[in-house]
Length: 227
Image 1: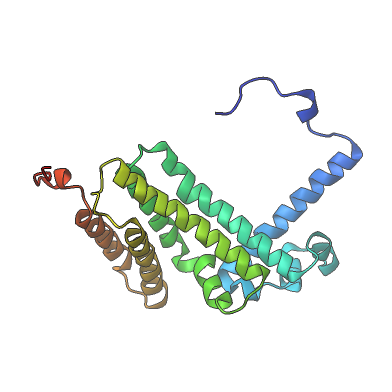
Image 2: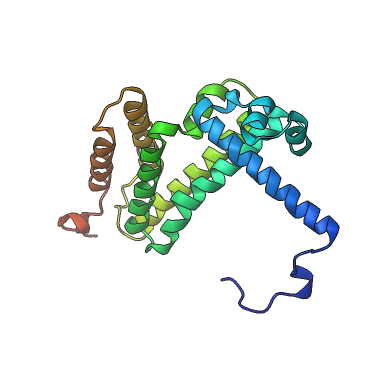
């Protein structure tokens, strides 16, 4: 829980000339990343160039280069920013929900909402996987690490639903997580590429079927196993 005590004097913002310059530099860097992220969602990470970002940001190439020493560094910064926004929209809000199935449902609902929004713009997790699946290096590592972090969070949510008794002891958490992830990928592909208008509603029905198939016996009205 966040402390409500007054801030320590050392925590006060630095209002010196150097402090103001550093704050302005951070703001400029954040603005560049925002522009680059907007470009990457439309053109992919490979579409990012210092020149394209500079032009869209209304800066010189040297100005952008001063904040990002290389195109690779810019791409990694974009991946981190995308991941942070993904967590803020999809993951953190579900922590307000009760542990178990309510949290898992909220997680999927938030994920579907973001998927719906990205049908027009594109998903960096998906497009990045296509671009860097066979290209080892720091950009691929940053992208894979972000996706793996998210998949671990999904797996924990499924296991928590089992621990809370909302899903049965027979549930294979890894398989359920795999299937839920597959629904997102399929719905994005169908809706964005094939223009299937029912893709999102089909994904929702499939999600409910996964939950039903793995429901705890007592929640299905079936007798519990006697020992």
